[in-house]
Image (cartoon, rainbow, N blue to C red):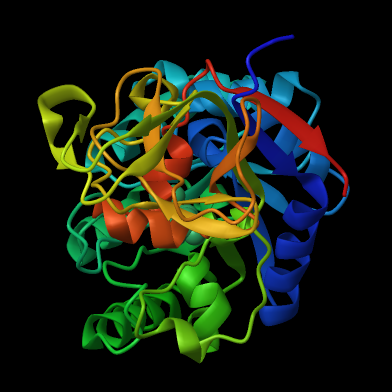
Length: 367
Ligand SMILES: *Cc1c(COP(=O)(O)O)cnc(C)c1O
């Protein structure tokens, strides 16, 4: 039997979360963001599951978009980083991709590309991204103005004005309103529809909903809002990924003995230690501290000792049901939210699900 280290992917939960986002933003089209292998859930499986319902898809770069087209998706596919080089414009036409224009060089490439087109040839669909304060990608208001005046007017017919929040998970942050106001002002000035909202804004800030919203982490059922904001959304998400691994070792140790590399944890009492077949080589974070919860037999028990490449050790002394070799442990998922684990590890749920390595078997279920 293959190693039972498995990311169980619940396709019904995925569909449920997509529908929840549609209900939360009924006037908007909702793009399913499937970049980074569908946030670690399997890009093509996720996209194919949503193929009947999704208004569109979004990916980071052209290669990801081509993989989606080759898999047979027919919806719009938006490339969030746009063209990395002039050649990407040819690919955008060949594969019918939508490109985000966020950098003046990309505007130059587009104008040059357009000059070489035969009369009547298909033109790529482009969005214009404005930098409203994240200062990562986006045209300045002046560069946006220049771009909209320079590109042939045919590109403006299908164009969308896009922005991206810097602090969307924190509903009380005044930056959100500032960024949205700036984008709305520009949209009014240039008579363009907008796309601003990502997951936290979709579930909790209806003012930000635009012609298109971009649904990422919430599609996968992970909490998009920070702890103090989370109560302000009544969207019910279902976790899509449940990460599981089997117990392959069990031992009794005495009080005072240490477990694992570097002996960072010493038992305070006589203890039962289970060794579980998952480690940082599988994407379980090496920096998970002692005390990070795992779920087994209806209880939460703590990680103890250092995470190794292929294994972790957990303290199962307090388990009511005595564990045996082969019992499955849940690292996160249906019974233990990935957000809780992320808080222990001092990272975010996005990083944990995205970093699951290829050595973990993904299984797909319609529960
Ligand atoms: C990844 C990404 C999204 C999705 O964000 P979530 O917070 O996961 O919903 C939206 N827009 C852009 C520009 C992105 O890069």
